[in-house]
Length: 264
Image 1 (cartoon, rainbow, N blue to C red):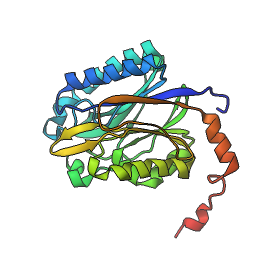
Image 2: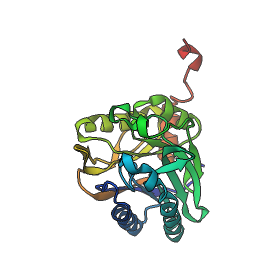
Image 3: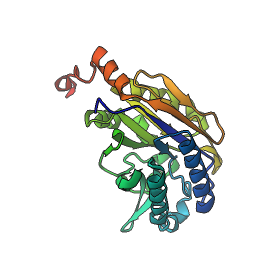
Image 4: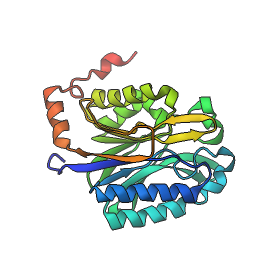
């Protein structure tokens, strides 16, 4: 793992059109094309990027998810890229807010069902919660997956780091009114776990909620490597895991944990 070469990770930030899969897919593919032109190895998309939280029609939108994934698999293979983002997925009678990770010609290698559902916007009434943290072994190394509200639960990100994740990808729809928390939480998760964080937020307005954009790439020391503003754009930055291992060597936080002392 320590011999992995640096690579470029990127984020596609756009205004998700509620219920308009065709428009949203076009925006996503345009951003992926732009990241490929910058030689990015990873393209991260926002939460529920195909349809937004069009909650009354989630079943209908979920029927399109497999076709969307098939199209992204072709793109990822053609561009030799990792593509990730969250979409609605129907399983039996239940719908899960599901993050998909596609890795080049390997196709779909893993999915993650959002564990922490945001009750304030009644997400728990329309979705079922996942119950398993996910770390993927990808062509760039071990990658953990999180979705939006998960950021407020440090136990999850710590579990990903302890399971080997060196980079955590986070898809989100984070509102402007709490965008300061977004910045702080992403940097905190990076620093306390000594990992890279890549986070894709949306911009625009949906259901009278204004979204803040401000997608970020953060280093293990909390340095902001790239940040978006509040409009549609792409961002990217080099990720070098050698920096991560060097920081962990200097300040071995993960090795000096005392879990027995934390057990009440």
